[in-house]
Length: 611
Image (cartoon, rainbow, N blue to C red; front, side, top):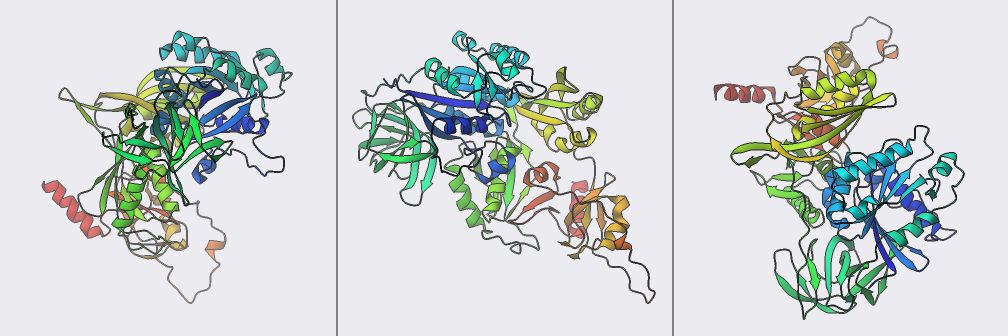
């Protein structure tokens, strides 16, 4: 038995300090050299993760404490990346539940914790950011206990140790009074000791025949595909012959050309890794997530990791706008897009891809707007260019009744604005569960159809002066709740191609808000703004001021236009209408009509009315 190994997953809501705590654990165990330049949030290696301050891709590292190898698995904090969560928790024996001392447990905390309890993992609770002015540590611990009860946690899980401290400052203690007084903040050693004593050692037997399940894939230009996972039984040896069992049951005999063992943030070649530890294996072509590596003499497949089914789908298509290929895109054809999606399917188990109605269309199904938006943004930064339609939820037929995905939504808003929040969500078929004050804010919890959340974030921000925060998690499928009104406002559509002029924007400023600045080039059919009424308006934003021989003072020098509203990929997906597309290139995110010419749109509307 691997008595000197501990496998711990860290669970926390977005921005509760999970990755920062991992930094502290790494620093205080001497993982970094004294002269090594190390940035903050070293586990957030992806560019998007650093920009947004969230963990998207599950990663793991190793620290050593008094002869014990502690494998730390950093898990995503958002339900849209549940595919990542499900896989990595299968490698752990315990969890560190990190909770903000002011906010307490949040919906994403609930989601990942529920997954952890389904694996019967033992928890340690860490109340982080104890130095915040609005910290309420004891109330938060009570809320965590209530959450454990609500999730039907095992009796062993209810006897959880609690730590208080600051991950950023690098200290933890069990003494709440001392923590609140700031008198006991020295280091993270008490937390290390508790991990070794409270989290059970792996019970995997190294003397049995080999069994290893792939939970993550990596790639090296030197050795090719690397399968990462936990050795659940036996020993993984370099040069060993074994059976590769795919998820569909197919088997073939292969050889491990090499085995990696994790050391800090890096990995090193090794000859053997025993049961209970994590490792990487290379030399096995076509190995996929969920596959099993087993001994020749006893080729037993491990249970396939259950992944939550997709709840939302979008149509991706080749970009056919007038600006296609003019924004620096390197990969624009359907072949390029197909190859990239096939590559993503190898590592993104929660994603589904199907061929569309035409050769240049693909149906992408995922766990939510953030899940799909992350893939689209990643492809954009890699030089891919494409267009996508409005996200659509996936319905189910249950005993002849139409069911739809329902989300559990939490909104924190100023007390004076909570009425507006409830009113807006009421139009989205939300049902209020409870409300409670949180200082000057009020927290309201709802169940709401997933389709009701599309585009609602902007409306809530506008209604609360930008102060509302909302978090949601998949709640389950429920009966269809009825029709929901589409976007209330219409849009302004450019009638011609050219450069946007100050003169035209100034004349149209009373018609609504704009998405393009003075001087930007637009094309016919591009959505250039939001109309103040509920109908679409075709406008000329490239019209220039007529030249005369009468001199006048320059109006542009004294009049300032409001800044245009800009969209990232997720914002655009939430805003786009049924008859519109989001054009995504390496430099821009634009909105456009499916039919660029006004005459084509009118012809489509007439056919729709006649039908």
